[in-house]
Image (cartoon, rainbow, N blue to C red; front, side, top):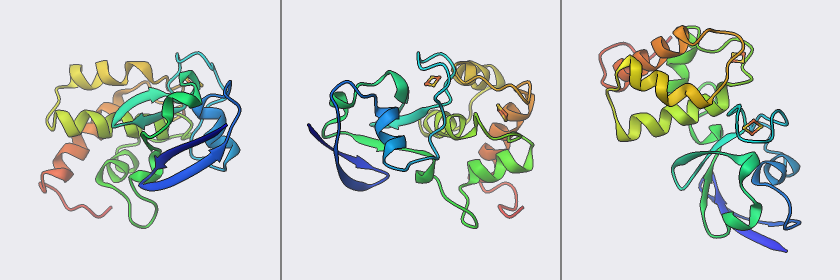
Length: 160
Ligand code: FES
Ligand code: FES
């Protein structure tokens, strides 16, 4: 079957097998910024993308459900040297270490800050609870989100 959807603002059409997940199709089509091939049951968050603006584990979404919808990967934020304030904040505060969990986490934070521009540490922790990080202990990521809030408010120099 053919599936049509918007990927990072561009219309795409892919030939797929109905049993494939969104994760499998994205990776097959070269979108290697989507991490995963990990739990494959929605419990680690590594493969998170935004589907119509809502974070979802792409390994749990059958590709047929994506028809006509809008998918965003971390590339929707920015790429060096033009990083999004959330990406800059994660680099500055050590929220990125090995980077495996980072693409999914950044998308969760993007969705959080778009509906709640000034979250409490508890709200940030709750929001990130579906994204497992084996490196940081999560403190750096909470600080990164707080830094992103400051940058987005224009309270600090955006440049690293
Ligand atoms: S690989 Fe999709 S949530 Fe873990
Ligand atoms: S930075 Fe390594 S898993 Fe999160």
